[in-house]
Length: 440
Image 1 (tube, rainbow, N blue to C red):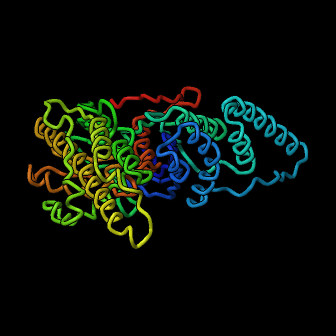
Image 2 (image 1 turned 90 degrees about the vertical axis):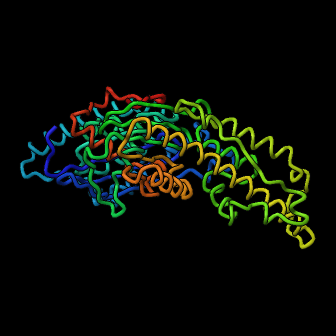
Image 3 (image 1 turned 180 degrees about the horizontal axis):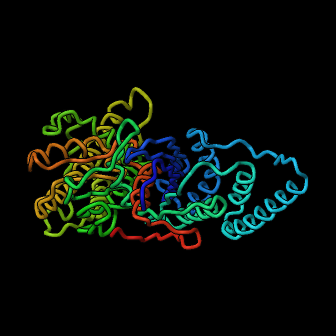
């Protein structure tokens, strides 16, 4: 597809628990983000210690129109409410009005069919579309998978409704590929797709639901080398935090606790006297780190955390209480959690770095690319950079701006635009959610 002077893309992401819509404009291969709106469900799911798909689906249904309105408004694309058609000749006005009502009724019936399982979203969508005119948008980029199927379907059906009503093509986007394309977003909200000097590249996409090592031979050319056989790295962070009673999401909490260990090489030195007799220096396994394949497994690490916790004498202490007499016990409890968080984080980092660098060496790559929510971990970012420089200073290292590591619609839009240029768009009837979609 030939690139026009200006293209505007509306991107939708609902693969998990964040309702995301972004709009950006492309001029001469340079991208400018016009809006990027995310409605988070973290507070809702935190009391359960993880994402409940049915609750996430319900929240997507409630939030999509609100998020769309905010995104269009920020992009200055929310058209004024429709006004009555004023035509001087009564017969022409009557005929035009009749045709308009017929088209509206026909499309409303189709929307009823598309959103029949989302009655609340249907009501909001019909009200919004009848009130506002079609914005100046050229295409819709949509995450169709992988992800939680109930959540994906809400986004898919919503995009199909917009596509039908506004006569816009839909570009299917793989969520994993979108995390890779997040690396082509600049911190100043303007970005440009990189050239072939990056390839071949090794991509590590690591999040709460995915841990994959992917060989990238060029834009849109992928081969999965390895992936997790059970829990993803982000899931391990969440489960470890839950075992320790630290809350959800686990990744940021564990990372923050781990920073309390000021001198990692002599961690036991801070545990003297009474505390040293209560806490032993914790050592957790690095699952599959030296196996010759590129696969991961973090379920055993989570289990090791549980066993360590259960065997520790710390568990037998009363829960921390805010009194002066309990200060010593509270301090021991806090030190234990800090030690465990440090070791959990370092175990995950060690495995991720070792496997990625092994793949980079085996395939003689020019670039290592990170993506996914866990890529926001500052210690992971720092240690990756240090290890890559030690392995080969000539290897380029790409990692997204932190705001584009976790799920967002900007990355979906960038990946979608690439496929749009290849002419890979479809009408709404052919779009389906694919919860187990593979990158290829």
